[in-house]
Length: 314
Image 1: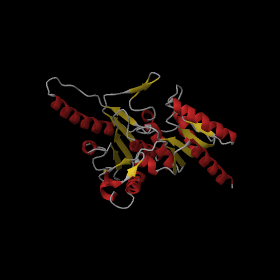
Image 2: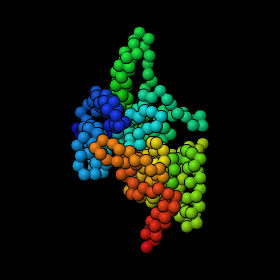
Image 3: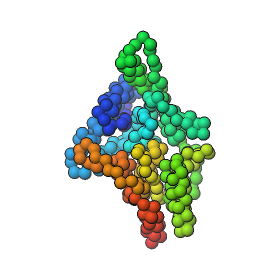
Image 4: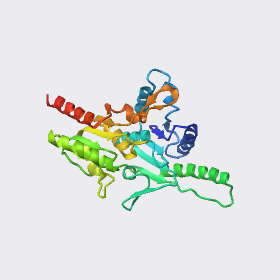
């Protein structure tokens, strides 16, 4: 029987996060379905091996992509008010290649929009086997005892859910309509997204450039239409102007990268992060390295789209 290749993703920016990833690792190996699987653990299997050679960010990205190419099953845990952008990208990449997807959360915080409550996020709930573990308070145990007990219970939870569920997303919306640009400015989450969008759209229409707008933070969002439009576009335009890029945008970017779209990243801030191994990045390396170009201004976006249009028409 063929062994499954599993990509196991969790936050890795602190050694506490990395330690927690080993808990997930043990949980997966205890399942009946995946006890003999090959499990790729980012940082252990990429950063620790390639980060001291040449361009560390590029090397780590390529190592992770090479693993994702062979991934049958993608499993991740995402917690916090903002989710890890790299995990979002990897999730979207595996969605595009039709891997089996599992997403877990142990967070105390949940989200909703227009009375729609999410297990994880708007898109994640539609594409993955998504599970929220609810902390259980045992009054007979100390604070530390409760934490240890819940870690053990969460391990069992992961093992049980991966054994029982195997949902795969299939898009039922088929469309052949083509677009030049798929615009995803944080899914139109903020008012400034709308202001920037209006300026971009005015220029695109002036130059007969067709476009689709991802507006998942509106009331009538249809993910299947969104992903069909992304399948049928040439350029994917996204935005990184947040402390952590919008998680669902990162999913769409990972999807776009696997589908060989030309990816334009817009990032107007000038913050540079210094990380282990000496490498620097303006945003998570998975989304940064997957871009064809990262631009700092609205005029830069328009100029690049016009340049790509002129190249296509030659």
